[in-house]
Length: 233
Image 1 (cartoon, one colour):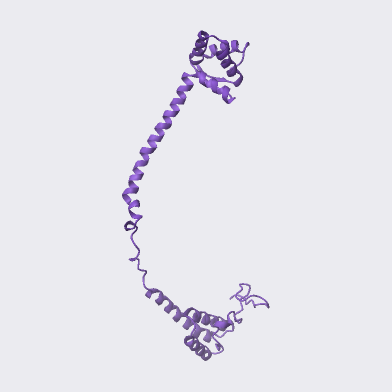
Image 2: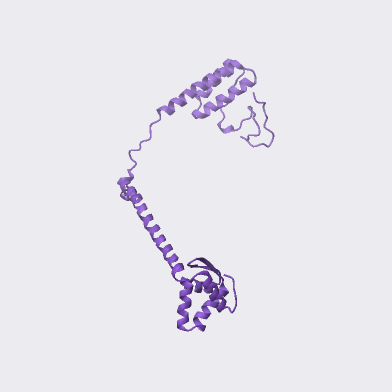
């Protein structure tokens, strides 16, 4: 049995810091005159609890408190009287719960019969799910087409890539017949400047064809000319 922890002066009622069986935590609801000295005292006290105007739960709590006090003081016969009453009240509690009427849900409308119902039928949900794969396939096809278009630009028009390198001021790759070549901004700028300002139309077409369809070796020779010296690619 747990050791009694008396309530200290100034300690609030109902505090979990004490376990004083003899302190009246709620005087307004107290059933006065309850005793536990003898078996007869306990029986008279049980009758007082029964005849009180307190709630069912309050009567059980009062009986439990008196039982605990009787046991602490070694009054086992009085404690047994309270325990018998407590068990009888527990049976009543169980019976009340079993006899409680079931909740009637018949008055709750079916969602399908309301204004929102037809929008969310099982058929609609299934149909929407069936359409998703088709939408996904179309999205994937469009993405693939955009990807292939971008690849074609790189493969067929290296000049556009070189001009974009100048515009973005960063490195870029062009695809040649024997592999890819990395072009820096300064090299790209020199090639663009040569095509736009230094070469005649005939040579411009030759240079563009070399850039789009040539090899790495041909590109290095072209860069050497436009840069007036060798430059790594």
